Length: 376
Image (cartoon, rainbow, N blue to C red; front, side):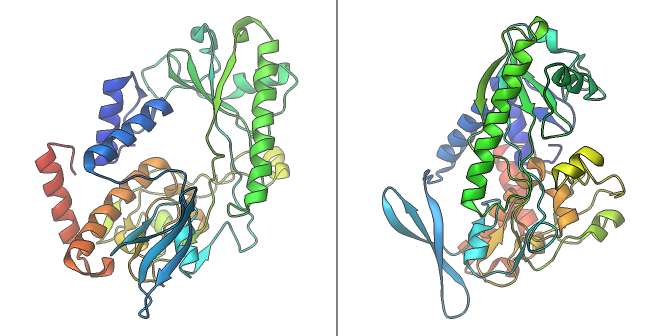
């Protein structure tokens, strides 16, 4: 989360609400505080928000331009018209419905990176878990080098988690983030498979918490506070854009003239099967040396349909590059860039690919200057 602009505003506003365990690049936040903050920011900005609604179809004109998205909800079927659309669904749902080319996983039939259902747990005496938990604050005594101690505790409870690098992250006070499970070879657009994966993962989280609590001692009173609202999907559709970020870009640390953000997160490829997880370890990217590289504006603009942009992990890239840029800090920066370009295009009657990179940079600088925020 070392990116400038909106990333820094989020961090600053969260810190005003609750203590953050943070370093220069990372921080752990209370998800309930983040939910409320994002909703408040949307209201302040005049954004119309509609929850409990899914995109199910799109409309295009005779010139292959996206003109509307169709949604379904308890309110029925609705059409939403706009001059420019941004697909921030993570799984590239809008791009796929619009007929764009896309890729998923290492090949058409996957194998995809596994999914993980995160959880929040609490303990009456958090200092007792100092030996097993990690903090992102480099000055914190919580910081640990390996996860061996936590894995050993799980073994003592007779638990072999499906994720080979089980982790506890200290969030605040008695609250911890638990990352314990892998669900393998699940396509993100297969609703039945994702449902079954979610149920298996939730059951595993409960087994782990009960097992650790049964040890007593420093685990006495461990409680499961909540599992995530949905299972975490690492590997969804990647919509083909006007530039495709590749492994070669990462290895070369490529600089591009229309860059919107510069990822520094390493290539993070999780084991594709339980066998890989047991034999080779939970992550399989040890042979890929990456350097900070640029994501260009062109990778955020759909190649096959006009009037469509992407932000987040569904942008245009290959499997290896995606394993680096898919994380939150990069997604926030991409969303900010896509929003600026979409606004310029919509208000001037142009398409996103017709907006010069310099024009977007100029508007963004003006916006942050007038708001007194963190530009750059």
